[in-house]
Image (tube, rainbow, N blue to C red; front, side):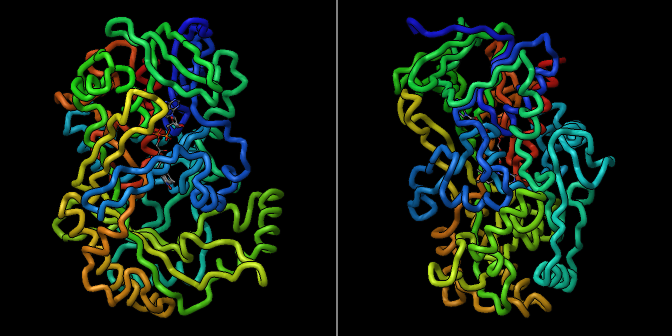
Amino acid sequence: MAGAMKKSFDYIVVGGGSSGAVVAARLSEDAKRTVLLLEAGPRDNSLLIRMPLAFRLIRQLALFDWDYSSEPEPHANGRSIHAPRGKVLGGSSSVNGMMYSRGHPRDYDQWAQMGAIGWSYEDVLPYFRKSERSDRGRSTWRGAEGPMHVSRITHDDPITRAVKDAAVNLNYPLVEDFDAEPPEGFGLPDLTIGGGRRSSTAEAFLAPARHRSNLQVVTGAHVVRIVFERSRAIGVEYRVDGAMFQAFCGHETILCGGAYGSPHVLMLSGVGPADHLRQYGIEVVADRPGVGEGLQEHPLVPMIFRSRQPLKLRSEIRADRVALSAVRWMLSGKGLMATQPLSSVAYYRSQPHLERPDLEFALIPTSLDAKVWFPGLRKPQEDLLTTYNIVLRPESRGSVRLRSASPDDHPAIQFNLLEAEGDVERLCYGIDWTRELMATNPLNGFVGEETLPGRSVKDVRQFIRAAAVTAQHPACTCRMGVDPQSVVDAQLRVHGLEGLRVADASIMPTLIGGHTNAAAIMIGERAADFICG
Ligand SMILES: Cc1cc2nc3c(=O)[nH]c(=O)nc-3n(C[C@H](O)[C@H](O)[C@H](O)COP(=O)(O)OP(=O)(O)OC[C@H]3O[C@@H](n4cnc5c(N)ncnc54)[C@H](O)[C@@H]3O)c2cc1C
């Protein structure tokens, strides 16, 4: 590190994503603490990030992304599966689908039962509420004074009404607020949107903190290693535009690189399974066999149906109308660009005796790769209804490992997707269940031929193995717990080391049965609270 610039702070936060942005913003609320936030991606000043509907374009073009893919998946026909992760201030909260979801209260009670003392739903609820500015107002379940906007989906179109009526005909409950009622049945999720703009953690937490002289945010800063003095983390090495820097911390380093980034940085720094580290010539600081192990992801299987009726969205995405909608959005924050096209979400059980729903269904009134069209230039896509089913508590487990000792090489991500037969069973059930729903009055008035997988496909299991992807909710690779495989304790301190915590989706003891952004933010809130005492 000869010639490298050296700086000193009380706290260094690695990664400015859903959790890291929260940690840095909360820690710097006290002007006496100096905080450095290092984020590998750029600033989040693109309009595409702000504009909710542009989420689809970000995804199609893989913008602001680490560009990770899994190793060939042995139980999914040897396919390598894309693993998107935000590489930008706000992390994945700047590129995600904005669905606000906490999972099931029992998910957190289960964490506590597994040894994560102080993480039951009753314990974590105040932190969900603290971060949230819900347009539903303050209640036992909801926060209204936090920085992150959470708002209801207000659109009400014929297909949305038809799904509700079909759900009632099948005796499912309609849920007005998935976080205030038992999360089971049909409804629409809230979205992390405020005033028609995406409420990422960069926008909600960091933007208001940017003026603080005790908070330094460096973007384009790739952390390559945590620096240890014996068993104490004393700082980090990072690279900006090819130049190496060191920063030192007087108190703590908080690693918030996400479920792929955090185990990767730990292993590059000598914290992980000793044999694996030695294989790449990395000096072992702490033999922690659980680092990178136990990766959990939600397997997702799409289905596609032709629509018998013209869908609004197809005419709305004609190029000239999109341009007008974009202008309208810029002037008023309203209209097509200000929301997500989602007609319904349902949480349901594949077997009646289960204590919680084990499947999630969603219906989107378009094709996922629908593109802007214009007569004479590009034809519109036909009217399609896309559905997906995800397994909420998958049994399959994977890993994140090193590919080499170089921080420039992507980590080796192995989901082992669908390794457990139970995950495949659930998706088979989900396909039958979806067919029944789509054939139920009055939704059947909209639903034409099933084109994916299609009724002619006889081997549904084979279709599942060929078509399954992930819901982009990786977790559990630096698991919190008290057993020898766990990586952090219930205050998120890395076992056996000092001055180092991990705070992001990687610390989940088990993957929650919902989308993971709100939980990652809650984890950031908790980490800041632990540190501030
Ligand atoms: C395309 C997509 C759609 C999704 N949709 C939804 C949804 O609708 N609802 C929902 O609840 N969840 C959704 N998720 C999941 C959710 O966004 C994530 O679970 C959550 O953001 C994870 O937070 P995190 O803090 O663990 O990681 P991240 O938010 O990914 O943050 C990690 C940060 O660390 C940075 N970093 C990593 N390594 C380094 C390094 N070495 N040096 C410096 N910086 C580093 C990264 O660039 C990133 O900014 C989606 C995710 C994706 C990718």
